[in-house]
Structure formats: C-alpha cells, structure tokens
Amino acid sequence: MRAVLFVLAATLAMAVAQDAPAPPAPQAETPAADVQAPAGDAAQDAAPDAAPAATEEGDDCHPKCQWKCDSPVCNQVCEPVCEAPRCTTRCEELSCSKCEIKCGKPDCEVRCPTNKCEKGSCPECTTVCRKPVCHTVCSNPSPTCESVCEAPTCDWQCHRPVDCPRPTCKLECEANPSCKREEAPEPVAPPTEPAATTVTTSTTTESTSTVEGNTKAPAAAPAAAPAPAPAA
Image (tube, rainbow, N blue to C red; front, side):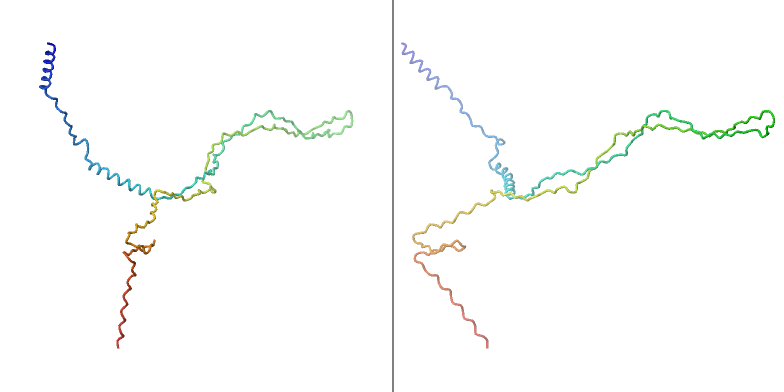
C-alpha cells in the first residue's frame, strides 16, 4: 500500500513540473548611443592633441645654449647730509665785581696873608688843596659758559660705486644624446647564389656587379668617327 502511494506522489510531482511555464530569458541591454563614442571619433579627437606633442618634442630636441653669469655684490658709496646745527649758549650767573678807588697825589699849597706882620702876632697861614682826581678800578669775574646743541638731523645720500666688479659670464651649451641619430649598421653582403660569382666589392658609390655564369670582359667602346676634311 505504501509503495502505491509513493508512486502516485512521484507521478503527480512530475506532471506539475511539466505544466509550469519556463522563466523568460534575460535580454541583453542595448548600449545607449550617448554613452560610448565610436572608435573613429575617439581617434579623431586624439589626433589634434598628438600633433602639438610631436612638435614640442622636436623643439625640445634641439640643443640650446645660454649665458651663465655670476652675481657680484658691492656696496654703494654713501655720505651723510645733515641740516644746519641748532645750538644755544648758556652761562652761569656772575658774582659781584671787586672794585677799588684810585686817586692822584694831593695838590695842596700854603697860603699866607699878603699883609706884613710888623707888630703883635702874625696872621696865620692856611693850606689850600685842589679837588682830588679819583677813579674806580674794578676787576670783573670770568664768566663760565657752554654751548648746548640739539641732536643733529641727518640722512644718507648714496650713489653708484665706480669700482664695482663686473659679472663674469660664459656660454654653456647642452648636449642632448636623445637627439643624435642612430648609427647606421655596417652593410652586410647578400648571400651569393650558386650560379653567381662575386667580381668586385666596393664601399664607394659604385654598386657590386655580378655576372651570371662565366665572367665576361666588357665590350669595347665604338671608335670615334673621323674628322671631316677641310674645305678647299
């Protein structure tokens, strides 16, 4: 009984599997026209950029020369230029002067009455002096003074020196080995064929000649025609 049920279940499962629809196959996506550019357009866009690169390489390949100079340094000649000085004189206060009076000798005389004295006491005589002549002599103290000036106002005036050394220059040229042409390989003679015999080999402009079979001498050049007889 169990075997019969198992066979029926297997048969039913196979029938259901055959009746189920198959899943649709995935379709390939069509590339958009604006996503990738054709190969031809890319080549045309790259071509203009390649031309300037070749030109630049050709220009850079040419060796160049340039001057190389040193840079000597020298100082300018400077002189100070100042404004007029601003100064004042200051003195200490003076003490009192020392003075003295000097007079000449006294000018005096004795005068007596002109009447003669005959009796009794004689008249008295008197001394009369003239007004003295005097003057003052003073000694002044020496003053103590000094000059006081403000700080000077100056500036520098500079000009070019006469003996400044000149720069030393030399011309340097570059050697670019990439610009040198490759040396041509040494010529190699072609293999000789069995029926050919090598006659001469030269490195000049003349070509190598070969003769098939036996070697033959070149034909002699035709004789020149006789000159016409002179007219009678």
